[in-house]
Length: 589
Image: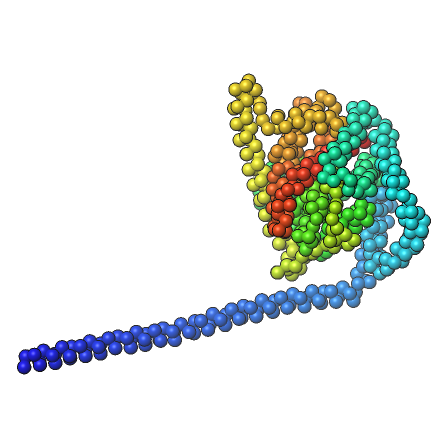
């Protein structure tokens, strides 16, 4: 009996427990289902919100495209009136500026630029064939065909005679200036030949050197120097360009004064004046890219070198763009072809970047007191020089993909700017990045060089040498090179040390040292200063080598090993290219 009661009690307890567990499970299920029901509206709401945002973005993009289409249609419809009005204003300005006594003295420069823009506007309506066909009808039968009928060696001999004629004519055909002597000019001529002989001697394939390209490049370098330094018109044009650039970049001081003060700007702080000008200039260039102005300039500039020097389209575009947008960025203009470049093309692309400066840092050097016309002239002269030197050191042995065409890649942006003001604003952000890179690179490299110099000085004291630094060591290697630039003998060491500073640190540091030297009790003579200002005008330094390898390696990852292999050779060629430009300037001053 007791057993039956116990069993019945146990069964009841078990049944009750099972019921309780079932109820708990049911409550959990009902809770989960209620939670899912509660969450479901939130998920639907999020999806609806995302759909609305996507719809709004699509609507905004459509509105931007429609606005662009309306503006384009308006311009096409009223194009004759707009361009005619602009032409009338330019013509009126030219007549007024030529007649007025206050501006009559600059008639060469204003005539050149006024009629340049008038001709550009005229050819928006006149087909190019109107001028090209008659020129071609005369040029081909009278010049091109007879010239190429001559044997190759005869043409090469004529080219060498013309090159030697312009070199010796420029060195000894003009009267002496200042403390210059004909011996100094003769040393510059000898240095030019020594540089070329060394490049030929260390060429990777001496039998494949394209001598016509080399001769034309050296001839153009000499001709540009003569045009600028020995002709009134050439000097006026380049000085006007340089003065315009300097005055334009000075406008950035208004913004700097707003954030700091007029007194701070007047003190000429690098952080304030130079970096403000860099940010402002890059913003302006980005706006010009949006409007298509930079692409037009670079493409026409590249066509000139492409036709004259028989190089590939990619090489011509990058070499022509380097003085405008600098190393690395210039390669982005031919981005689709970078991965297909030959070894010789990579070498030329890097050499042209090392041998010139970028427009974005032009303001920095001008603010340091370097004559603007020296900077502009040096950069333009270094374009044909870098092409000639690169092809002498690394001749083309393959067939480039872009031979016979000049293509500038504008690039496809995911979110293109809506208008010119938007492009200018984006350029300001990019300019801030570039200014930050300049600031951090200059700060860290100078600090690293100072640390190395401190260690060398500590070690040198053990040998009784109290000022042993990298610059002191390297300047003795540059002593003979400086001599062959035509620098006066008593100023060889200071100029050699400036070159060592440029190679070890950067051109910013070298120009800063030059500024300090000129403000000292023992400044350089006019001849030495001119040669030094030309010789420092380039990106050939160890830091820039890393920048170029990084940029080109990112554009063509599969060619990274090749890029790293030719990098040091391109650095040396770019460095010598600016020295050669300085030597040619030394022949003419």
